[in-house]
Each structure stands twice: as C-alpha cells, then as structure tokens.
Image (cartoon, rainbow, N blue to C red; front, side):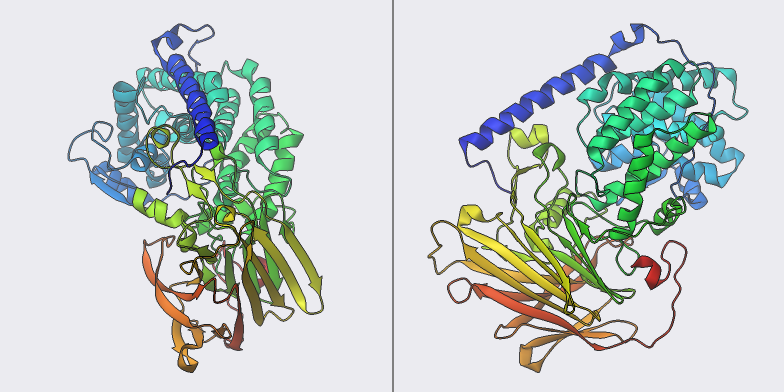
Length: 585
C-alpha cells in the first residue's frame, strides 16, 4: 500500500470523494422516512412467482442457525439468545452476508416446520431492528442481495403464514425495491449496480402491482449488461468470479420473465451467451477458477448448476483481449495468463497487482497458482493477496506493479482502490508448429524506470512451458546496486517440490505420480514458504519457486517447466461440475 504521490493523484481522489459523498447523500435521502411518503408506494397484495435460487443449500446449516450459530466470511459467531442483528459484527463482510439473507436457502432445504418458523422470526427481527436504517444493511449491494434472497425463498416464508406477517413482509420488500429503483444510478459501479438492476427487474415481474415498472427495469438491466459484460464475456472488474456470480442471479431472472410470458430481451440473451464460454475459459484442470483479481475459492456445485443451462456449450476463447487474459491449451496442459491493465479506480477495490502472472495445470493437477483470496475477510490478508508478491510473476524492488490507496481521508471514503498501475499492456499471440507463443509487457514499474516483459511458449504436446522475464529500461536507466527483482512461481499445496541438481532445478511431484522439472539456466533457484488462501477449507501452507537477481547483474531470466513423468493412463471422471479433462479444456 502506498499513499498518494502527486497533485494529480490527489485531485483525482478528491473528485472521487466528492462523487462518492454526493451519491451517499442521495441514497441516505431516498432511504429516509420521507421515502414512505413517496407516490406509488402501495404495498403489493401478493407475490406472483418466486425466482429460483441456484446456490447450493445445506440443511445441516439450518440446525446451526436455529441454535444461534452463524458462520460467514471465516468468522464464527454464537449469538447466545440475542438477535444476530443486534450484536457487534466481527467484520463488515460478516455483516453483509448476514443482512444479505443468502443463508435462507439452508433453512428452506431443511424442509421442517422449525426451519420455517425460524426464518419468519429472523425476518421479523430484521424488519423491527434494521428495516429502515443501518450502515451496512442498507448498502445498495446488500439490499439487492436481500431482495433476491427474499423473493427466491418466499415459498419458505409465506406458505401458510398469517396475514399480518404476509403484509409486513411485502411492505418491507416493496420499500427495499423502491429504494433500489430510486438509487440505482448512485449505486457503486460494477457488481453492486448490476445486482441492483437484476433485483429490481426480478421484483417488477414477481410482485403484483409492479408491472408498470417492468419495461423500465428491464431496459436498465439491459443497459448495465451491455456496459459491464465485455464482448468476450468477461466482467469489467476483471474478476473471473464475477462472471459466475452474474450468471447465478441472471439465469433465474431470465427464467422468471419467461415463466410470466415475457420473452427475455436480446441484450440479456446475448450477455448469457457471451458469459457461458468464459466459465470454461477460467476453469483450470482441477475444476477451480484461476485466481486473478479477487477470485477466491470456487463453488464446484454452483459451476455445475450454471453450466447445466448452457445449451450451446460454446468453446472457450483463447484470446480474451477485452478481459485481459490469454489461455494456452496443448493436450492436457493448460495455462492462463493475466495480460490486462488495471480497471478504472471506481472498479478496482478488489483488483490485484498481478499483471503478467500465470497459472498452470496438467490434467487434473494444479501446478502453478496465485495465492488467491482469503475467505476470512481479514483486511491484512486482503492486502497480502493483492500484492504482486502473491502472484506468479516478477516483482521489482519489493514493490507491487500497482499502487493501492492508503491513509485518510481518501481510503476511509473510497476503500483500497488502485491509484495507479499498468496502463499499457501490449500482447502478441502466435501459434505455429512449435506451439503457442505469448509475449506481453506492462508499464506498472515505469516510475522506477523499467518495463517488465514476459514471453512464454507452450509446446504442441503440452510437455514444456518455457518462459523469459525481462526488465527493459524506460527513460533514465536505474543505476543503483540495490535494484533487485524476484521471479516467483507459487505451487499448489497438493504438489510436493524438492531441490535437485545441487539447487539448479526443482522437481515438482503430483499425487498421481506425474512429475515436472523446473529449470532456470545460470540462476540460483530456491524454494521458499508460501500460502494458498483460496482453498475451500481455509488457508494452506505451500511452497514457491523463487529466483532472486540484481538488475545490474542480469536483466532477464529464462526458465522452463518440463514434464519428466506422466501419471498412469486412466480415465478419471470427476463429479458433476468437474467433468472429464477433455470437458474442462
């Protein structure tokens, strides 16, 4: 993290703060008591349809919720007889998950009268305690998630309920939808705004008396889909997980419109068709998504559910230039490389300094990874995960290729967005008899007078990945003996690594017997500790291959991964959502 260094940076941040403050003020006004006096605020008389919830449900979690145990974002809280909405939350992410009500699906899966009664009691507590004002519960993204959750779980909540609860529920739901409708233009850009438009569109078709809003809400949703879903199917935030999140909510909205006899718009259909191949684009050999720009642990069940809606089964692109990624596939070897510039500041709160980093898998074996994102929602781990050092790429002078906003007053208002980072990332891709070649560079270290260039080649048979990392002078060449750089390759914790050839190479062994050897001629290679943050079971210790060099000594490093042993030939069929290797690639 670094503070602002120039007057232009400060001026830009003050403009963002002013815009942020004005939008926050408008949201406060629209969410205040005066909103209850707004015209057309009649309470809907009933719900017409409940959108489907595609997220995986676990009925055993319903028992924990009934006992007052809530586990979100890596934090376990036992309320001890209090309402969960009255306690001090352990983290903002925990509070967002609580107030988003996505956990209602677990109560519905339990299919018991106790779970139904517990769900209604918690809804009533929320309406009574925070139904009008709360700093987190009324964030636009949280409101949108709650609206979608209440709509999709309405059969659990409303079946055989008394009339008073039915009316309280619809009155609160209508208030939240009205709030989203009025504040959508002031909602933070990116996923929160897109989620808000989906929630309003779903409500307009699901609630009685909202039909007059259907056309406008669908038009707004089309606008955001066209703007936020890039031509290659990626999301403007460059987070691979955003594509999965959007589809998990958009597919039920599309189905709801169809069920009510309203054909989905062409923009909605096109967005779905563009995003589906990108789900396969980001899937590595083991079924998990590549860990770039905020991607954490992958929900395999959700991926399988979303892909079940993919009738076309389109081939994933190789060159996702709009999203800023390259995909190299040869036989059963897969490499995904980040070749994109930093997103705009307003969309960069979760973006990483991982330009030119890569991930690699062979068959179902994950070999080279980035550290990913911690599910614990801890700010320290979030900062670590976003640094260049947490990615399989080159780091110069122990600094990241992006500068993150830190220090008051800006960070307090805007969050840890990216102040500056790579803006020019030229990419060249060639395919010939020798394999697939990618050459790219970025100017993230231009302030230190160097440019990082990385070239890689994956052989046609997938047995060799060769690479070269080079630092080229920009402007006045650096002259300090202290200028150093480090090339890192973080290894997945499922593989075992050991130094061989007197420290000149690393042998990487997979659990199924497959082996790869890493070499870097004329360089001293070492193994150091690392950590894998994106495992579904929590943080896992692992190792990283590291090359330390001084810039004055040499400006480039060549390296290679070569397969030295192949796993026993057998067709290993994964569970639903993982599929065969051929399906993944």
